[in-house]
Image 1 (cartoon, rainbow, N blue to C red):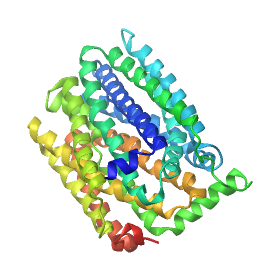
Image 2 (cartoon, one colour; image 1 turned 90 degrees about the vertical axis):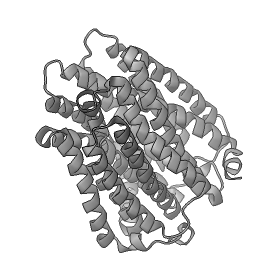
Image 3 (cartoon, rainbow, N blue to C red; image 1 turned 180 degrees about the vertical axis):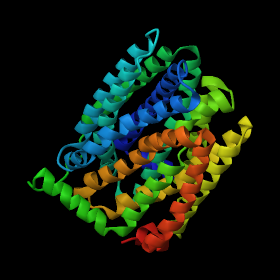
Length: 414
């Protein structure tokens, strides 16, 4: 069975458990600090201006990732990727301590939250390429697509459990939510220490070229691989425009009127949809017409975003968010397989860094875009703009990257 063939490898199993613990902590912490910023801002600002601050929170996390991504990718291709992950986990742990202290204050310091968010983003800049590049070293190549599906499921598990736990605990105490995330980071750290003690070939085989040369080589390789470039840039622009995550505090508080517990549930619905689809793909991976599947998934993502934008019933909104998560998982599955299969191990860190930067741009920078759009178009107008934008991007990319549209089988790509 697929699950046994993947999890029978001890290194991958420990890596996966550590990752899902860290993911739950990250998404729990994310929903908590977003609520803290929004609720604090609403004491003196209106809905649109408060939403703008939440958008800036995403920008604060993205900027360090943008500035450090290429350097981080070169490091992942030069040093033991497990040690990089360990260092990043330690920094994330320190940020979790800071968020816990800030949340315990009578009035949360928004500037301090922004500083910690930026430091957290810097850690993620190094963590993402090292994590993505390490996976192929943990399992045989022939089961890599299944391992990628399970990795994606680990992310979706974090999206399911993290926001729900964050919302429930935040309703009692934001400090309790942050402290719980801190405890999960400690468990994730223990898994990383266990992985570091195992005998794994996690040291990339690169020459003595300078870091600048290595970065240039990675960019040249990525530009020459039009299928990979098309896949990761499609996901970037579709989610950058279509993401509604940053708008959820406003929907929970002022449109659907369901409070912090409801905010956690809204965030969880995205993970439930994505997790269900990813679990299906882990057992029934897409085997034919994968390029068409990816483009169709992004188009369906845009339609689901429009559905959510106009919904005023809680259960309808939750169903729309589940569809958003499910359709996004299809494109994530295809993109991650293409990146791993078409990239040689010696360049996997650098290409993964660019891919990770695009993912972060679509998420954190997408939150900033949503906040900016909400400032000028209103919260609902921002969601509508995102849904239409995702549909337009799908059509453009189908024309700009015909090779992506024509990809049939993963095993035959390249």
